[in-house]
Length: 189
Image 1: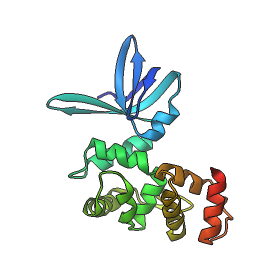
Image 2: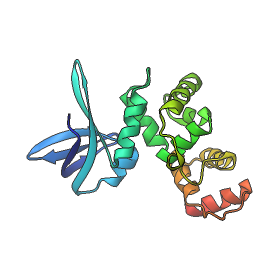
Image 3: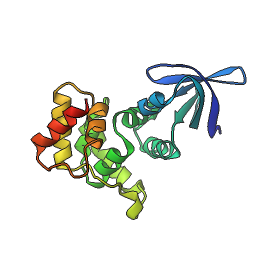
């Protein structure tokens, strides 16, 4: 297994990057958050090699937590690597974890390619596979108010990732009023 890769970033594309190691260019598929993290020069990615009958595919992640979550996602029957990457590209780990722990499978339906039944299946199976304990629940959960703010920002034309970033940038003492939170989130842009 290839656990990590370190080399020069030759190019980045919509869903993958080319990392050159010792004169050999590796095509590494990665979530959008990882691709944004890559820049010209040296890169280090934690990887997962998936071996199929007809291909060897390398997936790269900025953190081991992302890689571990990816492995948990693809262990669910019916969720392949493409859907796993789509989930990690659309939702941050904290938002994904909060959606699962709060039993809000509708958040998963915002991921392209995931319908209501698949979202419910993922939420049900992930709930048992997530780490337990106080450190497993991230601070600043994704509650109903933030969900309403996210819906409003997406309706205004922002992507889910942009909307989540704006919501995460809200101050901890931000008012609980949805309209005020939307106004503050719009100031982020």
